[in-house]
Length: 293
Image (cartoon, rainbow, N blue to C red):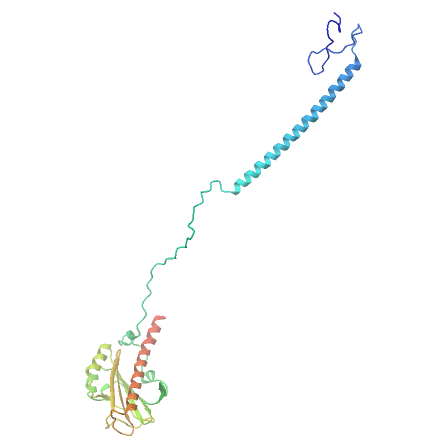
């Protein structure tokens, strides 16, 4: 059997196994066709280069896709790490919600100190006491009227500085001191007597027991002429705390005081009011000092 006869000549495919190689059919010695072999080898090499190039492109595309996927995955992970994973559903708020008013526990401040408590008994009324502390300076002003200050006196024998029925009242209630001071204005003089007791109850009792004949003795001197020694004068009685205070006012000329002598009445009332204020200030000063300790 000779090659190339008996049917169509088969073509040699270098990529197909056991395919027939193109030997020279006209040569009986079956010598290979080297030119055909060289051409086939060149064709095979070109196909390999094409495959290699194509494979490289596919590999590059695959690597690029892998890198892109990695970048996307990394970005996705970073975004996920920046956000809370399980967020609760947002609650609906009222459109006109108002902040609750702050609440405070009820507190009770200590009550303020009562100034009268400090002048109600000798145990708490411990501030220095004298005619000069109660009636300081050389004059006093009440409204538009200025009274010139005269002499002062201080005694523990209360009865000696009182007259009429007052000595007995002071002694019976335990008067410990009697302070006196006189003021004068335009021929009208007044003496204030402050009787000191151990308790407010005793002072209040002394005030209640005093009558129209219970008077303090007038005090003259230092520009104040004697007054109310024998003439009719006007007197007052009052008390505050452990103090009972008395006034006697009249003319330095010795004239009797009548119901129409308003100047004398006003002088006695002014000095009684001033005495009350001074005793009250004494209590206020001691209450303030105690509160600041």
